[in-house]
Every structure is written in C-alpha cells, then in structure tokens.
Length: 151
Image (cartoon, rainbow, N blue to C red; front, side):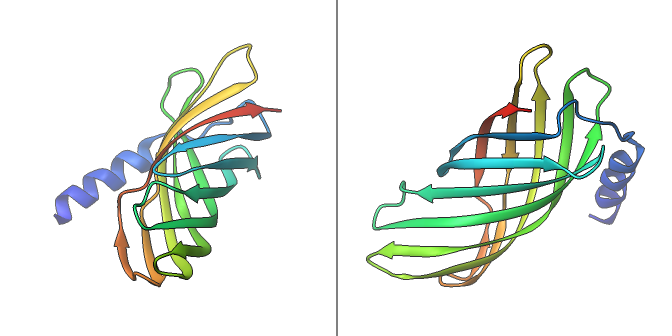
C-alpha cells in the first residue's frame, strides 16, 4: 500500500502545471444528483468550484446541498485536457422520511476537457465525502458529469 501511494504521488508531482484557457464557467452537473456548477480560476493552476445540487434519486428522502471545492489542475500534455483534485466541504438538508442536516468533508478528483474554439468545458469527477452529521460515515458513491459555458 505504501509503494502504491508513493507511485501515485510521484505521478501527480511529475505532471506539469498549466493554464486553462478560461477564467470562469457556469453549467449543469448530472450524476448521482442534479445541480448547477460555477468554477472560477484563481490563477493558472488553482480554481474554486461551487456546486448547488438536489439529490432526488434516493427512495425515501431528498437532499439539497451546497459544496465548495478548492482544485489543483494538472496538465496531461493533451490540448484542452486537464486532471484536477482538491479538498472541500458541503452542507445541506435531508427532507423526507428522515429529516436532518448534512455536513461533510469532501474531496474531488476529475478530468476536464475544454473544447477548442467553442466556449464549453466537459468534466467527469468523483466527489467522495465523509459525512459528519446525519447518516455519518464515508460516502464514496458520488460521481458527476458537468457541462459548463466558459467565459
């Protein structure tokens, strides 16, 4: 396990930093929930993303939550393509058979493609979380596909 971690860390650190060719983006995120996404680059390799989503796919309850993620972007030497990862947090409400508050520590890892000559970016991400309040525990099953208009 230690060797696997060191190999993964070496791969991440060996990837050169780069600049996405947009400053901000807004779009729709679909996956284990449905919602809106806003992304803002702070500099050429770091961005913040805010997600407001509604989880309507659970049988006996609905969840509405806001998530904030601090992202580090990495070049993969393919035009328009980037990997990203970073920490974050989310808060929200459970409504239904069980009402409650959602508070979690989040992580995110994903891949993004910025289309050339079109103001669109498409990303796929994994957003695992450690839920602290209401249904506490590790929640790994949170994936999303996001299409954003870039400007």
